[in-house]
Length: 200
Image 1 (spheres, rainbow, N blue to C red):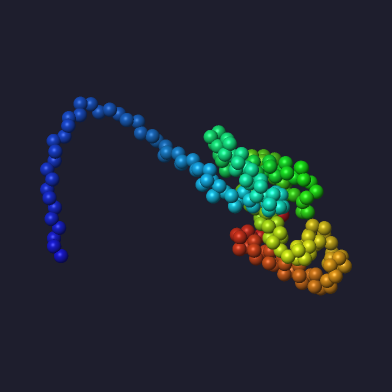
Image 2: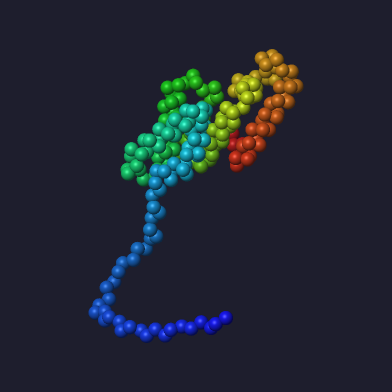
């Protein structure tokens, strides 16, 4: 291996500086750039869908509300300081409007009335709870109709096993067995999604 050779560089005569001009340097770090609408959509769409699904109970309605919220944000993009908070507030308002206009469509009670008094700033706990409710509703919607009916008979209409047995033609023991396994499957799916425990 050959030794490295460096050329000696002679310093150039510097230009004379007649005066030193003080320059004010910013004390704060530059503000983070505002995300684009497309980047915001990419980052927040899933959380907004779960939030809307938790409020409405219907995936198609949740998708429409999130789409409407993004369309409205596009119209006022330049005026909005906190787009994420604006979107969650807008989805909440749209969901409440939808529920008011379509009261009979929901088969499960709406959690929308349980949101804190300050809807502009829902707590992380409330958002997590509503996302969990949205995920449960989505999982229920994906179940075979007979399984979904068992869960709704037990938890939405609060029937006893005997009453469910009479309505479905299943034995009481089979109702208990099926409900146990259906709930275990829901719990496993929630755990895989990162949702643990129960908060009410």
